[in-house]
Length: 273
Ligand code: NAP
Image (cartoon, rainbow, N blue to C red; front, top):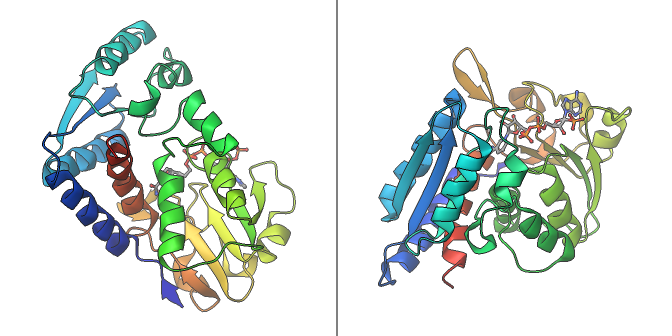
């Protein structure tokens, strides 16, 4: 069994980003829009801003009140779209109910849509055209590539169909000639599908959702889920018990999470390549 060490790989990616940034004659800027006070968001945002500081990127937080209207968010996006000192815009999810987040994502200029959630970015991905690819799927692909895991002809059980994880990842995996079965809460025979899979990717958000009996011997397991149990961050996989069965597995924390953060900065750099 080998760990897919997202901490190590993301550090290498960020070192490369730092080196490339040091050769630029301009400081890059990242704008983060946070509406409301979601607790998990505050932690993610803090991490992103900390990384900006480490990398010498001008990270700016625009923290808006819980009762902010969609129009106000869009006005801010417009302003940031036209600001040459801003190279990437992140609208932190979730947003309060009165705001249609997809509408807002679609207002972000494609070149600054470093999360890759707009219709244009997702459409280009489906069409196989260049675009910013959302950070979690891109980070997973980078991790698999780093460990020379060949996807061609592999059966993948992907448990998630969100636009943040499942839908972009599905497209990336099929572009590498994997056979992907996309599962969700209405899937009837999940265990049958996962047991037949060479690679199981779980992004459900339920601790110990993936158990030993759901995997075949030698399976590769990518654990995207993030939950908190007794104040500790855990993934979807019953980690200790599946270890004897898997060939590769991502730990939580230290797997997909750090890769996601690293890809934000990889995507910002893409703008100036
Ligand atoms: P989401 O939109 O709620 O997606 C959860 C997915 O799991 C949905 O597709 C849902 O199916 C499916 N699901 C729920 N219960 C299921 C069940 N019993 N059997 C099979 N499928 C089931 O959430 P998300 O934003 O994609 O995030 C998913 C998880 O990944 C969360 O834990 C989140 O914190 C984590 N995450 C981690 C990172 C990272 O960097 N590590 C990044 C993003 C997200 P339906 O579509 O039918 O509802």
